[in-house]
Amino acid sequence: MSETNIPVPESALSATECKGLAQVLASVGDKWTIMVVGALSRGSLRYNEIQRRVSGISQRMLTLTLKRLEADGIVTRTVFPSVPPRVDYELTQLGQTLRGALVPLHVWASKNKETIARNRVDAAK
Image 1 (cartoon, rainbow, N blue to C red):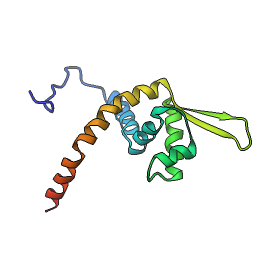
Image 2 (tube, helix red, strand yellow):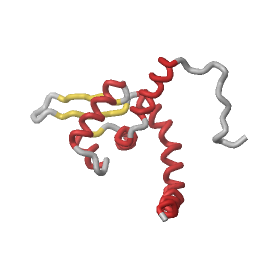
Image 3 (cartoon, one colour):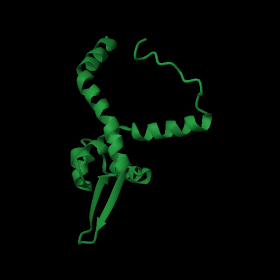
């Protein structure tokens, strides 16, 4: 049996469970979520440090992504009482488990990016 031929379990998900799973996967599988989690994988960072590490992300998209990740319990936001206020973002324990799940995806993408690029060129012909 190939890797892509996976048997479907007898007890299929209900519509509600399927919708909930789809929402979680859409959130954690988002391009910017993956990039922000990667940026925070080595420890806490300030907003501008995250923005510098996540190439191409707009200020608005970074703000929305961080707010969603905080609401999901993947990132913590710590405000330090200083002038100007200092805000640090860090992965929670749940965020660290997401990071662990994303590492194999990163390895796979790095290993296969050139092949995929070639396939795209061939498909465009």
